Length: 373
Image 1: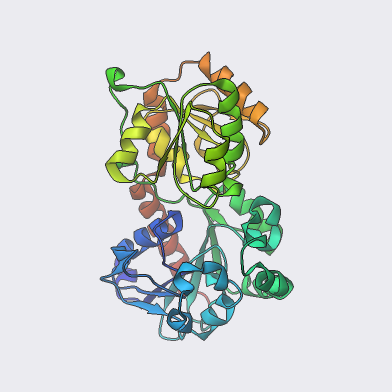
Image 2: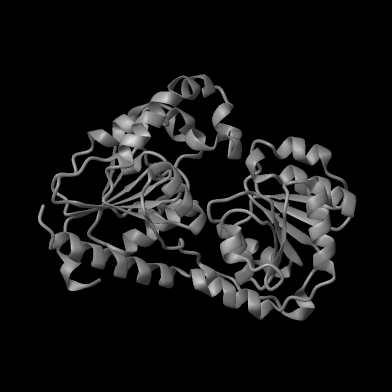
């Protein structure tokens, strides 16, 4: 880290830390970059996410509410108030990692607040993309507060001094909903954990890796492979698992959750990954590319920024089973070199993320530190 930032009081702010998914990997990289930083979050499950166990993690009053760690939908109406209660007055630099309310923390005028935005909240602006917010035992509470949350989110969007977007797709959303400029820095992917299989180790199956919830669109992938008859392995778990299994034919195998080397092995041995969701960025396609396998993806959203149609994969135009069938048949006639995929994935490494973030933060700190406040 450059000398000018080493002695700063730095805070990292994150929505909640109850599992270790893509946004938590961003937080982990930031924590590695700024070892002196304190971490602020609504709730923290130390047992499930031991990656931050050796850091000073400051939680909100929500930490003491029973069962809230496992029922994140309860957090949504209360998170704005929780973040506004944090006292960040001693910090020179605050970096929020946000999909929801973390950007709404309040800082003093001399503090530089940089917000790494994974997306403006989908449930507020584009609920059709993620219908989970309209379902569940506490959906009535979220629906009742939606208007007020939208108003608060607009006010909170003015609090960061600088925005970073995790993709061009999200940058466009920030412009649309917040009327703010943003710089794109792609999230870190541990591409060094993956590598292509030897030719003799390759298998003939296609792969689907995701949480099994409706907006990930595993349903249309199942329908497509029911028609195609090709082998498909499904890795993941979620609320839709039972209904999806009941629809799947014998050529489709559900493997549950797989992690680490076991997951990497399934990636590299597969013929291709099928990716049907409209995602803000999408780490799974990059992991597939790093494993030397092409990606058959819905041609909207973040996947278009990591996958190149015809070079490292194939896009389908509609979220329908027929569109996937056509893309798979097109792919069957193509030959995509594994090394092209690996080379494409290298652009999203953790090292590149850290380098770009470090340079960006240093530049903004110098600019902010020299302006009149």
